Structure formats: C-alpha cells, structure tokens
Length: 363
Image 1 (tube, helix red, strand yellow):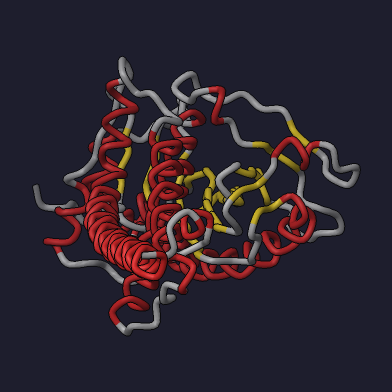
Image 2 (cartoon, rainbow, N blue to C red; image 1 turned 180 degrees about the horizontal axis):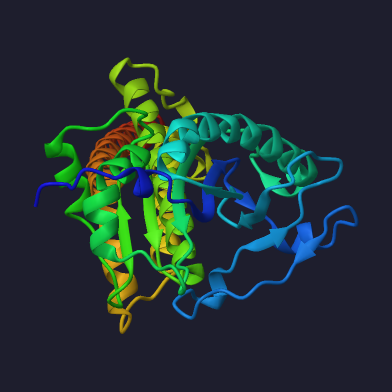
C-alpha cells in the first residue's frame, strides 16, 4: 500500500514515550552474586520478572555505585556468567521527525555513558569476578516505546501509512527517508497481540506501541545479552583456532607423554576440553533461562529477535567451531596415547632385555 503524504497536522503531532537502550558487557567467566550481596558498598534492588523467566537463573539488580551522573539509568543487572547489563530510559515528547533527527546522537551518547557506568560497576565487583577483565565484548540494542493515549489514540493503520517511513528511518538511526523497498521490508515484520498494538523488530532497534509493554522489555534485554555471549564465544573460538593454525598453540611437554604422571599435568588437550565444556554450559544456562511454552505472543516476539539478531547463525558458527575443537582435541589425545603406548612398549622391551642380560650373567 503506498504511503500517504503526511499533512502538516500529522507532521506536528507530538508523541510521548521512552527510548530504552540496553547495553551488555562481558567482564569475566563468572560473577559470584552471593559475594556481591555481602558487600557493604553495594545496594541491591528487588524487582519482579515475568513468569516466563526461571527463578534459578535470576540476575542480581543493584544501584549504580556512587558517585555517578547517570540520572536516566533504569537498571543495572549482574548475571552469574560474567555479564553486566545496563538499561537507560530516556523519556521524550516530540514529533517523530524531531525524534528521528536526534536518535543517532542519543544512541552515541549513551554508548559512551554505558562504558563509564559499566566500568564503575566492574570496579565495585571486580574481586567477586572470576578472571575479571573490563571488557571482552559489548552489545547494545534500543527500543522506541510510544505511549498509547486512550483519548487521542493513533491507530495501527495510521502509524504504518502516515508515519511508516519515519519509523523505519528511526529504527535504522537514519535522518533521511529510506527507500520504499527498505520501508516495506522493515514494516513487514510488524506484529501485535490486540487490535491496537504494534511491534516492529529490526536489527538494531525495535518500535513498541503497546500499553502493556513492561514485560516485553525483558525479552529485548535478554536477547541482547544472548547476542553478547554468542559473539564473545565465537570470537574466543576464533582466537584459539588461529593460534592452532599459526602453530602457536601450546606444545605438549614431556610430562604429558609419561603414563600416570601425564594424567595430572596440564596440557592443551585439557584446555580445549575445558573451553568446550564452559561454552556449552553457559549457552545452555542462557537458553534455559526462559520458558516461552504457552506464551505464543512472547514466543513470536522472541522469534523475531532471534531472526533479526541472527542468534541462530551465531549458534551454528559456534557449534561448527566446537566440532573443530573436538576434532583437534581427539587428534592431540590420540597422539598422546600413541606416544605413551610407544614408551610403554620400549620400557617393556628394555625390561625384557635386562632380565635376559641378568639371566645370562648368572648362568
């Protein structure tokens, strides 16, 4: 359907809402949440999460360490698999055209602010972090949430037909109007539960026009954290495989080949095996954190997020590299077993030779 030409009245129509910007930082292998709770300088918060989140994977929400200048920081959550998640809530009351003109600037501003705030959080919890480092990988995502005003409600058709091109530009952080093909492609993913609801999920941001949007925000935060962890593991596996390809991977020392003694020595085989297990455990922990069975609307939104953030593509890439790691581990282990077998055979031959020499000498 061709887009209607916006009138001066629609151009000047002011919307209210919030820009939710989700940032996630990977800062270590693990965060001891119980130890963090015991810190006097850490102020914890209680909060209610949707029923589709499992209680045994609950993150710990805390206040930003003082002093800080982030008045719009909505939440700070620590995840036990080594992730700091920050959410910023920036209210707006303006036309879509004006929001479009400043949305990239706002996004860039809070990209920088998130690094400062996450750094302060990390300094406060560093002692409770295993192999803590600020930071390995970073991920961000924005939600443009528009209030649904019952007295002056804009219909979904009006949003698509009158404001569709502006919404599409906002979602891509562009100040100019996109091509008709791009606009159509972006708006084609629109979904909603009730008649007046509209949610558009895109690669870097989403548009939410739904009076009951609070629970939905957890899905966006969770998907952003998943994208962070998957990218981190993919990058880590790339580094390990590059070391192997460049023959810089740690060589086996002599003790690794000795029977009994070699079993207690640390080797590249152990490192590869531990890396594979750690990755599989954390990915399983993330994927089992939510249960969307019986929640078709949330499942649909999450499915769009999986597609737009290419989470399945990252998973497949990691699984392929884990298979390579497993093959390399098997090759190294086979080499170790072969050398150990050869050593045992040589020792047996030497012992037999010594026995023969002793027997001949005695005779």
